[in-house]
Image (cartoon, rainbow, N blue to C red; front, side, top):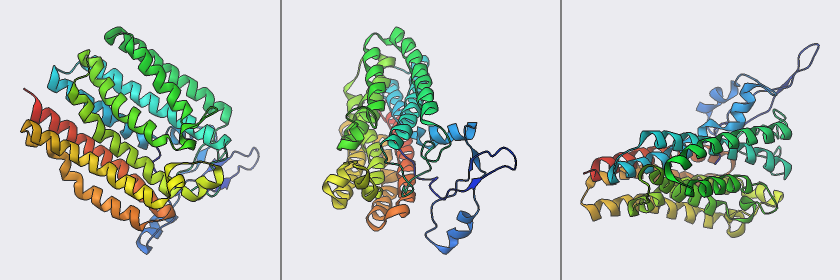
Length: 341
């Protein structure tokens, strides 16, 4: 998942005797005079191979996409039997590691496939900018996924061998999103991947490790979470449509056009708000409809997507990521308050 907050100009600086490559990351090109002064002041330079370079590659702003499904799945567990904090926290740590590992994989494989070029409209990438080598990123990816597997061993001990299949499928899919002989994201399957793994697998898996089963409520709760997570990808793909064509990346926005991307975004947000409303009506629990408080935010983001182009959509991308967090927290709270016995 890509948050578009740190795109911008590249500035190389060299030392006097032993040159060290540094990258100054600035915000995207300003869209109004009021923002120009803020955009002109560059962030502190990031040195190649430094901790800052690894933080940039890990993209911590995307971790909301890992946090929200676990929060909602834990709310389901609270409603259906009680929270098991050990498995819940382990699921959260595992989700963070899988997200970071996926980000590292996307960074290196997009670079190797030529998708990240100087024309890139999104955030700075570590491999493309030379901050980290492809070899270093692949080693980091192995370490991160190895840590995720270690957490998976604990969850397997708690919840049984089904966790092995879930964990391995998550890792393989995270790599196959942009890597391997048939990268999912390059063949229009990225949206399906996000919906499945950031929606159904993450929410239902979190509930499963705490309850030992997957109640029907978990399946219903997965749909709105996966929908908003997928909406983030839709903004990314609408923004990058022209550069993706050049890179041979056949996203749905490339295959079916910008209007189809706008329609998909609207449909996803409709699902995100309709499911909590339906659950609230079915159970006679108004609290479950709390996510509807975020509906005006979603409507504004859709208008911005319709009107925006290019780097102007970086703000819409970041806003949709924030919507995921807002919607997810409201949904988890609504489930816990409205359906707990």
